[in-house]
Amino acid sequence: MATSNRGMNPLDTLRDRYDEVETVCPACGYDDADGNWTSETDGAEVRYEHTCPSCGKVAVRRITIQR
Image (cartoon, rainbow, N blue to C red; front, side, top):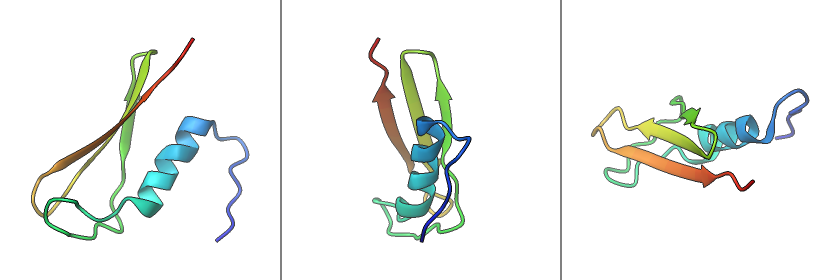
C-alpha cells in the first residue's frame, strides 16, 4: 500500500507505521487494528504508547533524539 507522507515529519511517519504494523498485543494477542498510538516528547526523547483495550497492557516505544 503506497501512501504519501508529504508534509509529515519523520516522527509522525513512525507513529503512523506503529498504527499500521504494531496492532497485536504481546500480552494477550488481541488485534487492535483500529487502535492508535499516542506520542509525546520532552525534546530529548519521543515516547510512543498504546494501551490494549482488551487487557490494559501498555506498549511503549522510545526514540532518543541525539543533538
